Length: 348
Image (cartoon, rainbow, N blue to C red):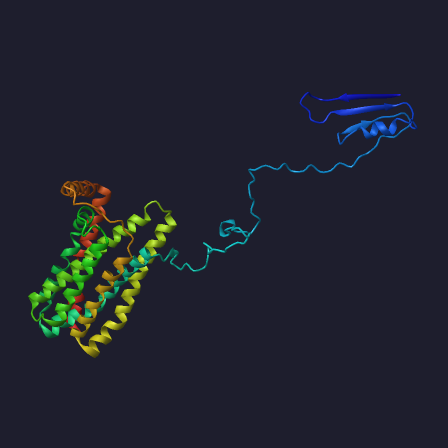
């Protein structure tokens, strides 16, 4: 006798459970009953018949149209471009070893330009010794006159904030940084070229040295603003590494100038050193093209003068603060202290 009972845990279950009771294991209706059972999960309980065990197949993943590719370990999915033949086209790895860093800073075109400007500032000390011998041996100036000309040439460094206001408020040929670097380099090359050729009196020498000092001071302000812009928003380690690159480039230029200045003056004379120094500022003009800067389009804004005036007022408010004024006063007194450099040079 056969009893077939379909049991389902819920009305929405796709696989009902069938329980079949057989009165005898040798019943002739056993085979037809089992043949009517499909691939549904069934539990068969019969008198004297052990429960059958079926090996279940592992569930197959459902196929759908929204498949998500999963990349294997150490596989660059972005470097594979699949075409109709199923072939992949390799692309350049982003993390190649082609990038070069110095002092922990990646040498991008901008950073190369910054380091070269600082290097030029350091290597321009090549003409310092030649200027001293030119004043003493060629123009026959006494120590007092030499000190006056030297102090007069330091005037452009006293008004450096003004250069920053000009660079920020008055774009030159559409650029606030690049154009002023080119102009500074050309100005420095002109001053040392005049020293190497036409200057033969103390007034012309004072004017040319003042012009060269102005070119270095202006380029220093521009490149310092570039460093501040790139260090803004970076971590302390990145900004510190950028400062190390700047000062390291300037120190390297100073070492080079110290090594060659005396020997070049002794071997070729001061005019040759002035001519060689005229080539160095051209490096500043050349690397200015590497500076990545967005061009300022349109005519100059009428509020440029107001912006400069507001900047001067804010600078004065900052200087009046004690934590800014007292260190500034200390540096001024330290720089104003007489030193024996000129006296020692004339003594020897």
